[in-house]
Image (cartoon, rainbow, N blue to C red):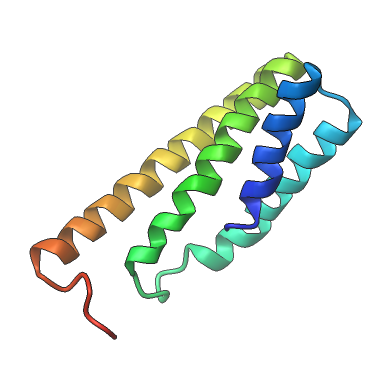
Length: 115
């Protein structure tokens, strides 16, 4: 999932510098979205053991969520705005799940155990 962040942050930086969404910005955004869609099924599996490293999924998802809202605003598309909202909800659920699982490990004193 870390591979998603450079494209989302690149999109945000590029559109902030240029002030518009052109073909290059669109390619950055959609490539980040494509990577997120391809990599999510590989990351979010039940058999993958939980560790503190799972917090690393929050930054790429947050960056893509912000980029999605900005792209939807630039495209003036209600459908994209709804999809951006769904990605934001997915981000919130992912953070809650990671927080709860981390809190469970902290409370059972198993956070830094080697498996």
